[in-house]
Image 1 (cartoon, rainbow, N blue to C red):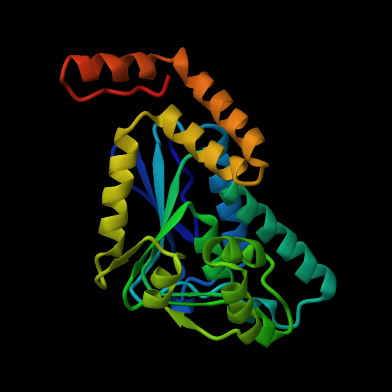
Image 2 (cartoon, helix red, strand yellow; image 1 turned 180 degrees about the vertical axis):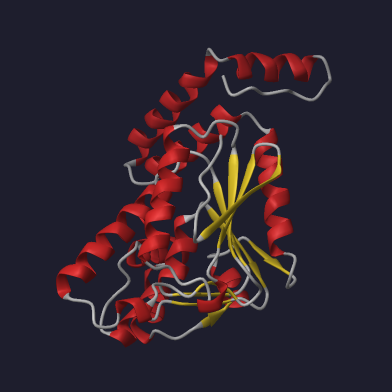
Length: 265
């Protein structure tokens, strides 16, 4: 797959089947503006329509100061109500497209992840963070509330009571706190979070891509169902994999004591 030359995103392929996406506005702490919203929506849509060789992605911020400071409030200064709503609808589409992305994506939080930046990380499948990273949902201090999944994804990650405290106080919290509460999966030394996330992505990409995607779908949607219905959903996802070349290759490789070579079909 040949991706466009985006203005606000840097896309790289550090390993076969692994896509690294950097939010690339370091001068404003990678805050997302209308252009970045459009480009994120374009990227996630392309990967949903046809991920081609990509099997896993890592999302991070350019530079070493910030993952993403949220929406660019300088661009929003003086916006009319209609312009604000139109921009937010674009952001909603971009965030929801990320949430529905079929292939797995890891957030590598290399610095501050505030407001929409924190919500962006929460939309990913899981989060690795530098020990020096800071998180916050600051919207209530600005006269709004999180509007890109924060009021839903944060309580699902850390529990309702803790999420209420974070959102209502708008106070920052540390990566160590986020790890203790179950929001992030791995604490990394400063400067190492992207390489650690890429190593995990490379491990995922070596597994059967159809199976990984079905597992993601079963976890995501099954978690919203009554348990018996979720069991049936899991079995349906399982059954889609039985008559695949990758399933046959996995069993053959096991019996032949060799590494499986999955093709995604």
